[in-house]
Length: 337
Image (cartoon, rainbow, N blue to C red; front, top):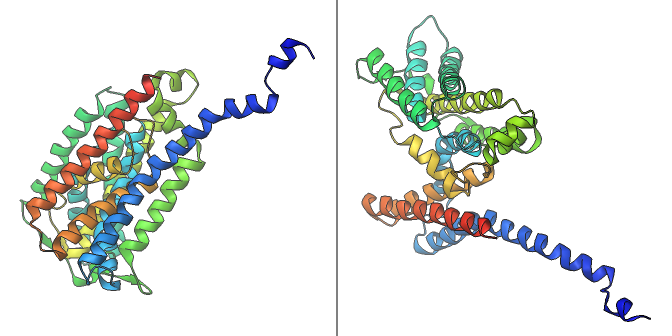
């Protein structure tokens, strides 16, 4: 055997060495995705120890019902954020959709299903406007949706004169109804999450959204119809915001033009806590759900332990800052390699 042959590494060793970076990257990414979930488990365990009322069927059901609207909004918001966009109009869409659905329901000539459909479709209509402003008028998503936030909120106040509209008690079918033993909001949340997961992981629309968020110009040059994809994700967000508005109105049997004031920020926070990057290209529906659950656990646990709302807001703010800071550090580390 020659010296060159003796010095040459075995093919198997080379393959192992070549595959090591990919293995480490896979493990690192798995830990990043599991991080928020592990945080939820730790927080849930701590609350179970701290309060005997936490781990009860009644309380756990209440947690999932309370998080349902934010989780539904987060499914749409994660799609928008994956494209490196953002939708700030969500809270106003929630208010307007709830108001219009209630107005239809209180009219004896119309039915509750029609009122609910109107609320959802109105949200989709606002989504179309947002998508067109971003793609055709070329406004930055932040500015476009900030404008519709104000305009749509103004419409909700104008058509109600700033006053809530009471609906018949039968309108509570979405907010307080049940499918067997499971509250309807939880069922709707599960359906929306399943559909959202399928869109992002199994469809061309989902793959295109990730591509656009990773590199807009590369996606455009590769033949992706960028405008269509962007309009589609804003429409999906609008439809889900409309559904959230109907659920909120149904739960309180009232169309309130001031409903959902902080829902846009809550949805964005849930998505960011769940591991999505505000720079686009990264994010999952499961992460958004975990983020929404974590936020609700902080609120629910604070109430059970008699912690002031001021401290709850402080804790949630720290969690959001930590999530965004971690994303920044991680991105800089990747860029430096």
